Image (cartoon, rainbow, N blue to C red):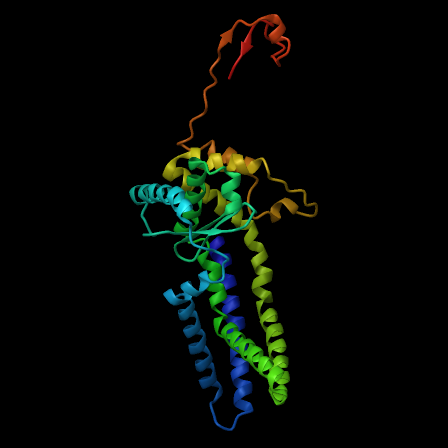
Length: 327
Protein backbone atom coordinates (compact mmCIF):
# COMPACT_ATOMS: atom_id res chain seq x y z
CA UNK A 1 0.00 0.00 0.00
CA UNK A 2 2.78 2.43 0.93
CA UNK A 3 4.69 1.63 -2.27
CA UNK A 4 1.58 2.17 -4.43
CA UNK A 5 0.84 5.49 -2.72
CA UNK A 6 4.39 6.74 -3.14
CA UNK A 7 4.55 5.58 -6.76
CA UNK A 8 1.35 7.56 -7.44
CA UNK A 9 2.76 10.72 -5.82
CA UNK A 10 6.03 10.40 -7.74
CA UNK A 11 4.33 9.87 -11.12
CA UNK A 12 1.90 12.76 -10.60
CA UNK A 13 4.68 15.12 -9.48
CA UNK A 14 6.89 14.13 -12.41
CA UNK A 15 4.00 14.48 -14.87
CA UNK A 16 2.93 17.91 -13.63
CA UNK A 17 6.46 19.31 -13.72
CA UNK A 18 7.08 17.78 -17.14
CA UNK A 19 3.90 19.41 -18.50
CA UNK A 20 4.94 22.79 -17.09
CA UNK A 21 8.44 22.49 -18.54
CA UNK A 22 7.00 21.48 -21.91
CA UNK A 23 4.62 24.47 -21.84
CA UNK A 24 7.45 26.90 -21.07
CA UNK A 25 9.59 25.50 -23.89
CA UNK A 26 6.65 25.64 -26.27
CA UNK A 27 5.89 29.27 -25.37
CA UNK A 28 9.55 30.12 -25.83
CA UNK A 29 9.50 28.42 -29.21
CA UNK A 30 6.41 30.35 -30.30
CA UNK A 31 7.98 33.69 -29.37
CA UNK A 32 11.43 33.01 -30.75
CA UNK A 33 12.82 33.35 -34.25
CA UNK A 34 16.04 31.46 -33.49
CA UNK A 35 14.54 27.98 -32.99
CA UNK A 36 12.08 25.93 -34.98
CA UNK A 37 11.38 22.68 -33.10
CA UNK A 38 8.28 20.62 -33.64
CA UNK A 39 6.09 19.36 -30.80
CA UNK A 40 7.82 15.97 -30.55
CA UNK A 41 11.26 17.57 -30.36
CA UNK A 42 10.09 19.95 -27.65
CA UNK A 43 8.72 16.98 -25.71
CA UNK A 44 12.03 15.13 -26.00
CA UNK A 45 14.00 18.20 -24.91
CA UNK A 46 11.69 18.69 -21.91
CA UNK A 47 12.14 15.04 -20.93
CA UNK A 48 15.93 15.20 -21.24
CA UNK A 49 16.07 18.37 -19.15
CA UNK A 50 13.93 16.79 -16.45
CA UNK A 51 16.05 13.63 -16.38
CA UNK A 52 19.24 15.72 -16.25
CA UNK A 53 17.91 17.74 -13.32
CA UNK A 54 16.83 14.60 -11.49
CA UNK A 55 20.23 12.96 -12.07
CA UNK A 56 21.99 16.05 -10.73
CA UNK A 57 19.88 16.07 -7.55
CA UNK A 58 20.62 12.42 -6.73
CA UNK A 59 24.33 12.79 -7.53
CA UNK A 60 26.93 13.27 -4.76
CA UNK A 61 27.03 16.98 -5.58
CA UNK A 62 23.26 17.19 -5.23
CA UNK A 63 23.37 15.49 -1.84
CA UNK A 64 26.15 17.87 -0.77
CA UNK A 65 23.96 20.82 -1.72
CA UNK A 66 21.08 19.25 0.19
CA UNK A 67 23.10 19.44 3.41
CA UNK A 68 23.39 23.21 3.00
CA UNK A 69 19.60 23.42 3.28
CA UNK A 70 19.63 22.17 6.89
CA UNK A 71 20.79 24.39 9.80
CA UNK A 72 23.46 21.91 10.92
CA UNK A 73 27.01 22.31 12.15
CA UNK A 74 29.91 20.01 12.87
CA UNK A 75 30.36 18.50 16.31
CA UNK A 76 32.52 20.29 18.84
CA UNK A 77 35.43 18.43 20.41
CA UNK A 78 33.41 17.81 23.58
CA UNK A 79 30.45 16.50 21.58
CA UNK A 80 32.72 14.27 19.49
CA UNK A 81 34.23 12.70 22.59
CA UNK A 82 30.75 11.84 23.82
CA UNK A 83 28.82 10.94 20.66
CA UNK A 84 31.28 9.38 18.22
CA UNK A 85 32.14 6.35 20.44
CA UNK A 86 28.40 5.70 20.86
CA UNK A 87 27.88 5.93 17.11
CA UNK A 88 30.81 3.58 16.51
CA UNK A 89 29.24 0.98 18.82
CA UNK A 90 25.95 1.21 16.94
CA UNK A 91 27.66 0.91 13.55
CA UNK A 92 29.57 -2.15 14.75
CA UNK A 93 26.29 -3.79 15.83
CA UNK A 94 24.70 -2.73 12.55
CA UNK A 95 27.39 -4.38 10.44
CA UNK A 96 27.21 -7.51 12.58
CA UNK A 97 23.43 -7.97 12.73
CA UNK A 98 22.08 -6.40 9.54
CA UNK A 99 22.84 -6.28 5.84
CA UNK A 100 24.67 -2.97 6.12
CA UNK A 101 23.54 -0.61 3.39
CA UNK A 102 25.13 2.36 5.13
CA UNK A 103 28.91 2.13 5.35
CA UNK A 104 29.50 5.36 7.24
CA UNK A 105 27.25 7.83 9.06
CA UNK A 106 27.95 11.55 9.34
CA UNK A 107 26.72 13.11 12.57
CA UNK A 108 25.78 16.79 12.90
CA UNK A 109 24.36 19.11 15.55
CA UNK A 110 21.54 21.64 15.38
CA UNK A 111 21.53 24.48 17.90
CA UNK A 112 17.84 24.31 18.71
CA UNK A 113 16.17 24.15 22.15
CA UNK A 114 13.43 21.87 20.74
CA UNK A 115 13.91 18.13 21.21
CA UNK A 116 14.42 16.61 17.77
CA UNK A 117 16.61 14.30 15.73
CA UNK A 118 16.41 13.62 12.03
CA UNK A 119 18.00 11.59 9.27
CA UNK A 120 18.59 13.16 5.87
CA UNK A 121 20.49 12.46 2.71
CA UNK A 122 22.03 9.04 2.28
CA UNK A 123 23.99 8.82 5.51
CA UNK A 124 23.48 11.90 7.67
CA UNK A 125 21.96 12.24 11.15
CA UNK A 126 21.40 15.49 13.03
CA UNK A 127 20.54 15.92 16.72
CA UNK A 128 19.42 19.10 18.43
CA UNK A 129 21.15 20.41 21.53
CA UNK A 130 17.70 20.56 23.14
CA UNK A 131 17.29 16.80 22.77
CA UNK A 132 20.68 16.06 24.30
CA UNK A 133 19.89 18.32 27.24
CA UNK A 134 16.48 16.68 27.64
CA UNK A 135 18.10 13.25 27.70
CA UNK A 136 20.76 14.57 30.10
CA UNK A 137 23.46 13.14 27.83
CA UNK A 138 22.68 9.58 28.99
CA UNK A 139 24.52 6.99 26.91
CA UNK A 140 21.66 4.49 26.54
CA UNK A 141 19.13 7.14 25.54
CA UNK A 142 21.48 8.70 22.96
CA UNK A 143 22.27 5.27 21.52
CA UNK A 144 18.54 4.61 21.20
CA UNK A 145 18.06 7.85 19.24
CA UNK A 146 21.02 7.21 16.94
CA UNK A 147 19.93 3.62 16.25
CA UNK A 148 16.38 4.81 15.53
CA UNK A 149 17.60 7.38 12.99
CA UNK A 150 19.94 4.80 11.47
CA UNK A 151 16.82 2.69 10.95
CA UNK A 152 15.32 5.49 8.85
CA UNK A 153 18.50 5.63 6.77
CA UNK A 154 18.63 1.85 6.40
CA UNK A 155 15.03 1.66 5.20
CA UNK A 156 15.50 4.77 3.02
CA UNK A 157 12.42 6.38 4.52
CA UNK A 158 13.50 9.90 3.57
CA UNK A 159 14.68 9.21 0.04
CA UNK A 160 11.20 9.20 -1.45
CA UNK A 161 10.33 12.83 -0.82
CA UNK A 162 13.76 13.92 -1.98
CA UNK A 163 13.11 12.08 -5.24
CA UNK A 164 9.72 13.79 -5.53
CA UNK A 165 11.40 17.17 -5.07
CA UNK A 166 14.01 16.21 -7.67
CA UNK A 167 11.35 15.74 -10.37
CA UNK A 168 10.88 19.51 -10.46
CA UNK A 169 14.51 20.43 -9.95
CA UNK A 170 14.96 22.13 -13.35
CA UNK A 171 12.11 24.57 -12.71
CA UNK A 172 13.35 25.27 -9.18
CA UNK A 173 16.89 25.85 -10.43
CA UNK A 174 15.53 28.19 -13.08
CA UNK A 175 13.56 30.08 -10.45
CA UNK A 176 16.66 30.29 -8.26
CA UNK A 177 18.71 31.69 -11.15
CA UNK A 178 16.02 34.27 -11.97
CA UNK A 179 15.76 35.27 -8.33
CA UNK A 180 19.52 35.74 -8.08
CA UNK A 181 19.54 37.82 -11.28
CA UNK A 182 16.70 39.94 -9.94
CA UNK A 183 18.62 40.64 -6.71
CA UNK A 184 21.77 41.60 -8.61
CA UNK A 185 19.91 43.91 -10.99
CA UNK A 186 17.96 45.48 -8.11
CA UNK A 187 21.23 46.18 -6.33
CA UNK A 188 22.67 47.74 -9.50
CA UNK A 189 19.53 49.83 -9.98
CA UNK A 190 20.13 51.37 -6.55
CA UNK A 191 23.55 52.46 -7.77
CA UNK A 192 22.64 53.29 -11.36
CA UNK A 193 19.04 54.32 -11.95
CA UNK A 194 18.86 53.16 -15.61
CA UNK A 195 19.09 49.53 -14.42
CA UNK A 196 15.55 49.87 -13.09
CA UNK A 197 14.40 49.22 -16.65
CA UNK A 198 15.63 45.62 -16.21
CA UNK A 199 14.87 45.31 -12.49
CA UNK A 200 11.10 45.76 -12.71
CA UNK A 201 10.45 43.15 -15.45
CA UNK A 202 12.71 40.65 -13.68
CA UNK A 203 10.87 41.21 -10.42
CA UNK A 204 7.52 40.60 -12.13
CA UNK A 205 8.86 37.41 -13.76
CA UNK A 206 10.15 36.15 -10.39
CA UNK A 207 6.80 36.79 -8.70
CA UNK A 208 4.90 35.00 -11.47
CA UNK A 209 7.38 32.11 -11.39
CA UNK A 210 7.09 31.76 -7.61
CA UNK A 211 3.30 31.40 -7.92
CA UNK A 212 3.83 28.87 -10.70
CA UNK A 213 6.07 26.77 -8.44
CA UNK A 214 3.47 26.88 -5.66
CA UNK A 215 0.73 25.89 -8.12
CA UNK A 216 2.78 22.99 -9.49
CA UNK A 217 3.40 21.70 -5.98
CA UNK A 218 -0.30 21.60 -5.11
CA UNK A 219 -0.91 17.97 -6.22
CA UNK A 220 2.07 16.60 -4.28
CA UNK A 221 1.25 18.80 -1.27
CA UNK A 222 -2.33 17.52 -1.19
CA UNK A 223 -1.29 13.90 -1.64
CA UNK A 224 1.62 14.44 0.76
CA UNK A 225 -0.83 15.01 3.60
CA UNK A 226 -1.73 11.34 3.33
CA UNK A 227 1.87 10.40 4.20
CA UNK A 228 1.05 10.96 7.86
CA UNK A 229 -1.21 7.90 7.79
CA UNK A 230 1.82 5.77 6.90
CA UNK A 231 4.46 7.58 8.96
CA UNK A 232 3.39 6.02 12.27
CA UNK A 233 4.12 2.51 10.98
CA UNK A 234 7.47 3.84 9.74
CA UNK A 235 8.28 5.09 13.26
CA UNK A 236 7.35 1.73 14.78
CA UNK A 237 9.65 0.06 12.26
CA UNK A 238 12.55 2.36 13.19
CA UNK A 239 11.93 1.62 16.90
CA UNK A 240 12.12 -2.11 16.15
CA UNK A 241 15.31 -1.59 14.17
CA UNK A 242 16.88 0.15 17.17
CA UNK A 243 15.80 -2.68 19.48
CA UNK A 244 17.16 -5.30 17.06
CA UNK A 245 20.58 -3.62 17.11
CA UNK A 246 21.14 -2.67 20.73
CA UNK A 247 18.15 -4.03 22.63
CA UNK A 248 15.18 -2.11 23.97
CA UNK A 249 16.96 -0.35 26.84
CA UNK A 250 18.24 2.54 24.74
CA UNK A 251 15.09 3.38 22.81
CA UNK A 252 12.92 2.89 25.91
CA UNK A 253 15.15 5.26 27.86
CA UNK A 254 14.72 7.84 25.10
CA UNK A 255 10.94 7.41 24.88
CA UNK A 256 10.46 7.55 28.65
CA UNK A 257 12.35 10.85 28.67
CA UNK A 258 10.26 12.24 25.82
CA UNK A 259 6.95 11.03 27.25
CA UNK A 260 7.21 13.28 30.28
CA UNK A 261 7.11 16.41 28.13
CA UNK A 262 4.73 15.14 25.47
CA UNK A 263 1.45 16.94 24.96
CA UNK A 264 -1.09 16.82 22.15
CA UNK A 265 -4.42 18.53 22.64
CA UNK A 266 -5.56 19.26 19.09
CA UNK A 267 -9.29 18.82 18.60
CA UNK A 268 -11.01 18.01 15.33
CA UNK A 269 -12.13 15.26 13.01
CA UNK A 270 -9.57 12.41 12.93
CA UNK A 271 -7.18 14.61 14.90
CA UNK A 272 -5.23 11.68 16.34
CA UNK A 273 -4.82 10.23 12.86
CA UNK A 274 -3.00 13.37 11.78
CA UNK A 275 -0.10 12.76 14.15
CA UNK A 276 3.11 11.97 12.32
CA UNK A 277 4.49 10.06 15.33
CA UNK A 278 2.62 7.60 17.53
CA UNK A 279 2.20 8.55 21.21
CA UNK A 280 5.33 7.63 23.16
CA UNK A 281 3.33 5.44 25.55
CA UNK A 282 2.09 3.29 22.66
CA UNK A 283 5.60 3.03 21.24
CA UNK A 284 6.81 1.89 24.66
CA UNK A 285 4.00 -0.67 24.82
CA UNK A 286 5.00 -1.97 21.40
CA UNK A 287 8.64 -2.33 22.46
CA UNK A 288 7.58 -4.32 25.53
CA UNK A 289 6.60 -7.07 23.10
CA UNK A 290 10.06 -7.16 21.51
CA UNK A 291 12.12 -10.29 22.05
CA UNK A 292 15.00 -8.37 23.67
CA UNK A 293 12.81 -6.69 26.28
CA UNK A 294 13.47 -7.79 29.85
CA UNK A 295 10.71 -7.02 32.30
CA UNK A 296 12.09 -5.41 35.47
CA UNK A 297 11.78 -7.60 38.54
CA UNK A 298 10.48 -5.97 41.71
CA UNK A 299 12.65 -6.74 44.74
CA UNK A 300 10.85 -6.72 48.08
CA UNK A 301 12.76 -5.79 51.18
CA UNK A 302 11.08 -5.93 54.56
CA UNK A 303 12.57 -3.81 57.32
CA UNK A 304 11.49 -2.81 60.80
CA UNK A 305 11.22 0.90 61.47
CA UNK A 306 9.95 2.96 64.39
CA UNK A 307 6.24 3.73 64.23
CA UNK A 308 6.75 7.49 64.27
CA UNK A 309 8.88 7.23 61.07
CA UNK A 310 6.49 4.86 59.32
CA UNK A 311 3.54 7.15 59.97
CA UNK A 312 5.32 10.00 58.17
CA UNK A 313 5.86 7.88 55.07
CA UNK A 314 3.45 6.70 52.39
CA UNK A 315 2.72 3.01 52.81
CA UNK A 316 0.40 0.46 51.28
CA UNK A 317 -2.88 0.48 53.19
CA UNK A 318 -3.00 -3.32 52.91
CA UNK A 319 0.38 -3.67 54.69
CA UNK A 320 0.92 -3.48 58.42
CA UNK A 321 2.40 -0.24 59.70
CA UNK A 322 5.62 -1.85 60.87
CA UNK A 323 6.53 -2.93 57.33
CA UNK A 324 7.91 -0.80 54.53
CA UNK A 325 8.04 -2.38 51.08
CA UNK A 326 10.78 -1.04 48.84
CA UNK A 327 10.84 -1.61 45.05
